[in-house]
Image (cartoon, rainbow, N blue to C red; front, side):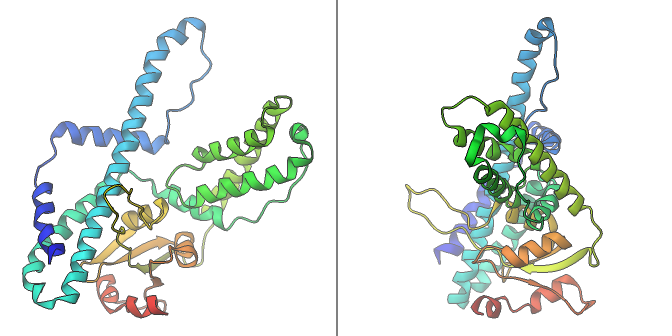
Length: 324
């Protein structure tokens, strides 16, 4: 019963309208994040220009920090609201007499939830989600010696494989630009050298070239025409598990999964908490093959049904899929 009663509390908190200054700041955040996670690297400049540019660079770093914080807050708030709705649905399923009371509150919450989803999606770049899915299907690269690996000695191949694994693992489940995953490779190479310095700069340069090649391959794969370019997929996103006061929340969804659901939603059933997504082929394949264990996923209308997504979603037996 408290799961339904608490909806009124959260709706009251959502009632305060954002002022124009906040909205302008969020629009600026979207512009910044469209370029990347961090300010573009500064070009070479003279000594006189360098001091003048330092204050400007600090302001840019602060701007990008704010932008990332905006996105994180929107993402976390949208997921929290979704969890409140999911728990209230569970309460109504267990105690059907709550349905008349819950219906109006859930309807209002669904409206707020969709507004928050759209605000979060505006801070995510769909092309990055597609490129992340392309990384998953790239062939495993073969190790070939490079003069830049000389400082790694016998550890060169092991470092190569670990760097590729860490880079692809982070890239596949992220909403960031592929270039913004390079720190994972830098860390692997640095760890392999330990305290040694000889050959380290050359190794980092060689791995930067490798990473650039992986990124180029992923973008080529993302741009490759598919026989079925878009697919209709149904998902039931899990609620965030409850935690004790001292424990941090752990969202079962990856950042990539959350961003995909927010970006590609075409229908939402608030009674069941299920969502229909119209997604590019590579994104659909990654969802179907690798989705979080507690998130049912299935193609809708694989036989080409012309029924609206809302109707197909209502007919979807997500509970039977979860049990299987």
